[in-house]
Image 1 (cartoon, one colour):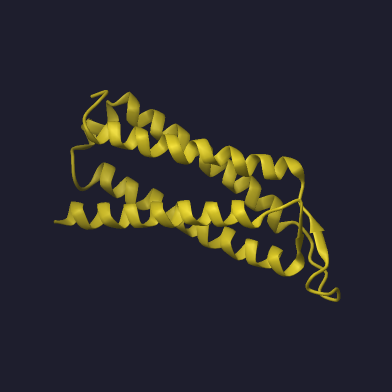
Image 2 (tube, rainbow, N blue to C red):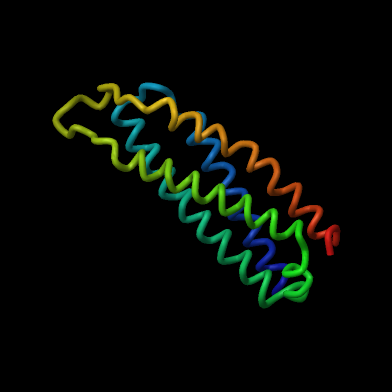
Length: 147
């Protein structure tokens, strides 16, 4: 029963992570208004919380509930999935760092444009293949492939 609850929580936060990244991707452009930039920063914060909670629920599933830890620890598919998740976390953190250090002028109008760097937009799009590959690896891992 506990494994089902933790697995459900894990899946719920994975979905929140995907939705957050898609919102960020769709809301970002080369120029955004200051109001949109503040909204993007809020979505980055909520998505960061989702990433942390996905990681915590994943570690709980790995070490304490569900299948034995040896099932995951000896599986190269699991290690590939973890590596891609760490890459996703690194790219997301770098993008969030860059967005949070864009200055917003409180005296300017809310629709004053702020330029986002094109490399930032490319890194956001680089997260999409990771969002596709990680669930595929999770499915394969859960079916016992690689063990």
